Image (cartoon, rainbow, N blue to C red):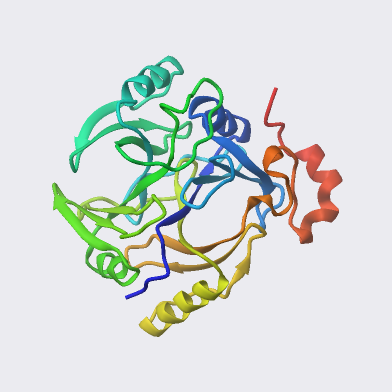
Length: 310
């Protein structure tokens, strides 16, 4: 069993409009845009990052907003719901705030003894807020969201699978422990996590496989401290039979990827070097930052990319 993984690092999804996406995460959810850069493989498309003040691992939602992208088809083989942690007693505030801002899919419920508010993102993404009594992670407060209500980071992700068996075994190998099961959902918890240590597996044997598009999660990333720990994880996964990519430099972390038995794309990402490697913390997410191989495209990209504000 691995001991290097410490919970979620980030979740990356796709959207159809960059400005709408930016508005939703900064002005509706009150998160900070911690990086404005571009897709490594398609530099004419943004890669936007939202999180807490520093973009700490376990807090960051990232997006590839492909202009006018068609909507995804929800189904199995993907992350269906991304869940954020909020303080105990704050769901009334969030229900009122989201309703006033025209957010759809609002539904209050209780799962695994936790109060929860489900809602849809601007592309129909599956999201939820869960009240957590003692989540002392530092927060970003802006756009009318104070410290008593602000999102602390991720609580969990829920994956929709036809059969959870092999993925459950993978999570146990990664260091997760079975917590509880009921109504077709099995919860796994990471002991000693970074605060974002829960994964739910939803078994849906009769649901069709999902098709990715706007509103779909592209991949979910798990956190390791550094490159040394990452290489240890990579070797262990490969020794177990997984096909894992070489280490890829993503500027703000190093990444490896592999496909899970249930079809979900997993990433193992390092906590280093962080989002302040090319911007002062006070000004994260303000300037357009380009990977080295795309810096020569700056004049073109600054004209082509959609303005996020205004």
